[in-house]
Image (cartoon, rainbow, N blue to C red; front, side, top):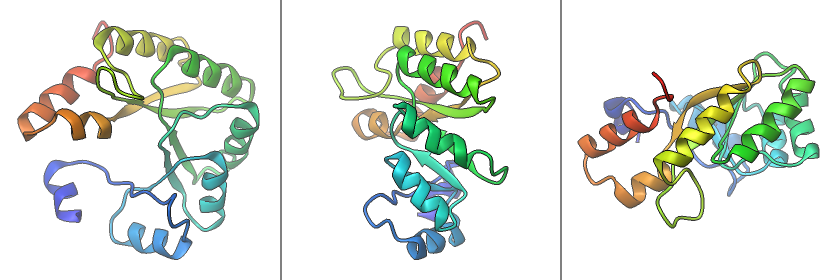
Length: 174
């Protein structure tokens, strides 16, 4: 897996939500994983207590209590947190909450497929999400794309994936 990551220049954050085992997290990080992927704010807090300092939450962060949990962890300057976004409402909720606590949140845009369950499914939705992120320049930081659902469904070649990801990651007007 590490050879794949190095060859394609991607960052790997293996899922930790199934095992919730800090010893396994440590082995994965020591072997070159960029971070650990988790599903909920409670899992993020547990992993942090187990020594994980870079987390990708494979969902949108919703709910005041969950945002409070993450906000508390962000007081640690060594902790990096990323949560996916795919909607204007989600971005605006994060922007409003984290602007009150004077914190900056990293948000990759989750790419989806037409008719899929999650993710940005077309260019118009992408553009509205990017515009929402731009409304919160001091609070919400665009931190790339998360294309796993798209890649599973659509990317059959390296060239096709690279082309799609490049087009999808541009901000409007750039």
